[in-house]
Length: 119
Image 1 (cartoon, helix red, strand yellow):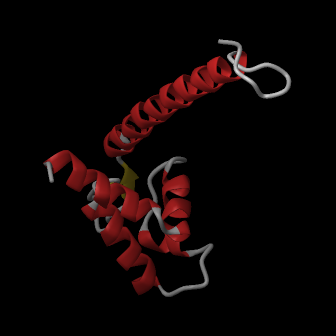
Image 2: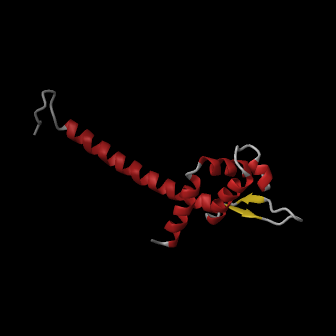
Image 3: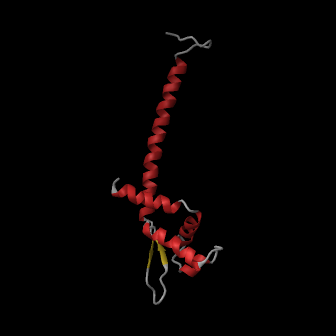
């Protein structure tokens, strides 16, 4: 497994959880502290901190130092890498679908109404 694939695994694993996706959506609006991120969730601050550690390990967020607080900040670089991977694979499958569609059209064109070939 290459380093990129391993990093993608971390990103996709982090994105698999709806709470972590919600945290990322909140951070897209600007930096926030753990307390601010925990507010909308019916979970402890410790549980939110565990989600933040997963997001940090996937390098989707970073924490800065502002006086005595450590606000979290969204880091979009690895999201962009994941989005690029998805786009490439979407194109591969679209190309395969187009080739299959062309093949099926050609097969249908080679048959008459009663199912016999025209050759």
